[in-house]
Length: 272
Ligand SMILES: Cc1cc2nc3c(=O)[nH]c(=O)nc-3n(C[C@H](O)[C@H](O)[C@H](O)COP(=O)(O)OP(=O)(O)OC[C@H]3O[C@@H](n4cnc5c(N)ncnc54)[C@H](O)[C@@H]3O)c2cc1C
Ligand code: FES
Image (cartoon, rainbow, N blue to C red):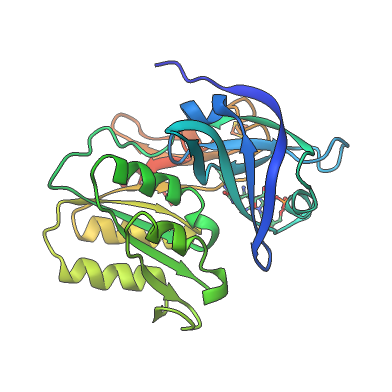
């Protein structure tokens, strides 16, 4: 099926700081919301001037619905540099140039009963996972969710996962909430206790976390789908600035674009 991509100028509906340095913004666009799938992203042009020149990629965090109609979407982001700092200064009514939805998200076509989706998010990597958890619940699944952050303050969207009647297993590096340590340690002990689960891991987070998730999935004979991050210039497949090395059956490997063939790839195919 051909993917629909919209180029729109959208007024910012609402923007709130949800923790120091973290923001949640809402945009109204039934067009983007009605065709978006979990793991897809939008390119967001932040300023009208030349600096920052390039748009910034941001995942679709959740879909805004009213009476079961998809009306818009939210973005959850962390301020890390100039673009995100300027974005945090935007107020309701100001417009943003948006292109999306983009990329190939999580593949949920094969999900059936008797199957356990395991969702793992680290840091701001939880951004695309709320939309994913929502879709899994709509498909009748009860995903097991693992969320990790530096501290309780940076553990985002916990309430939203709980409102889906999920009970995330939580870790923080400073021990201020949940188990002290890395989310991958928590995942490893869970997989150890539940040997033989017919599951698949869906993860997003920093590259070292994803590499560890891929290796755990391999050790326990599970499939994994991992959402990768790369710096992006166009987001549309044209500049080849975002390629990663992916194993293929014929010639050993090929370079694939995170913005087009990804951001989600099968964990076993990624050459780290
Ligand atoms: C598909 C995709 C989805 C994303 N979704 C989200 C999201 O939902 N929420 C969110 O907070 N962030 C997300 N990001 C990361 C986000 O795009 C960057 O943080 C943002 O572009 C930084 O812009 P800036 O101008 O503030 O920072 P810059 O000044 O450009 O950079 C500041 C620092 O961030 C690093 N950085 C910048 N862009 C990236 C990138 N794409 N990948 C890795 N490191 C980067 C730079 O190396 C530098 O150290 C996503 C990235 C991708 C590729
Ligand atoms: S960002 Fe240009 S090809 Fe991916």
